[in-house]
Image 1 (cartoon, rainbow over the protein chains, first blue to last red):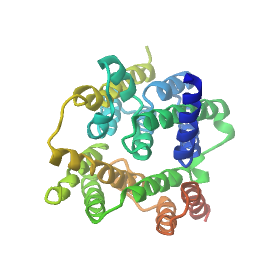
Image 2: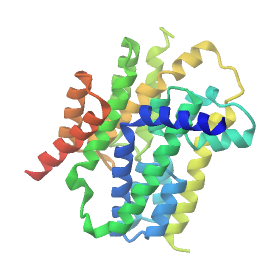
Image 3: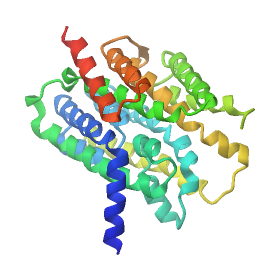
Length: 217
Length: 101
């Protein structure tokens, strides 16, 4: 019984998450290659993918340390980039039930893609995220292993694919006038703050755009 | 311990704590209806900010480069209601093509 339910869930997650798995593998791969070229260490890169499991903060850590930044600055930048998971976690908090330890564990499975595609459905978020984790860690390991053979992964437009992925996830969210207004406002806040605040801050502050829905809410 | 490993440990632990804030801290509370409806708007707000960051962001600068072609292609295909895999693939192809020139 249990295994049938798991199979069904994985099949559902595979269908819902189909668009993001290849992209996650490709970005994971480019993170692995980057870790090699920046002398971060292959094992450290794979462990980081398995535990931190958040692309932009991992890429920031590796490139900042590789570029001669201090350890403290790299850590602060990475954590700021992940601070969006504060509001993201609060927005799906209702979906999580059960004991504290279980909620803590399942909270780790809320990442950008599983959150956006899971639509507040706990089991779908978990299913998509487990598959995403396999792609992400597998991609990183492949990138570490192949390293210099691949060269600069962005030659294949992987950074552009990531931008396109978020366009696709956003398009799915714009289902009403209010949501479109919130998106435009969020984008404006992010663009305005990028030159004046540390990386990651603009994305968190963009959450304030939800206030555009105050009156209609 | 090398800087890389310290970063792996601290960033990993910190990220896990940040992710836990909502599901651990808020899960059992009932929020006012208005707050719940505003929380549903967090997704378009943050995803729009991520689009800006992934398309134009380079550290603390906004730059126009080949990624804009990828994002532009993605917007066109999203408007045409193309499937996700096509949107992502077009993003990569357009970016790679512009970069090759």
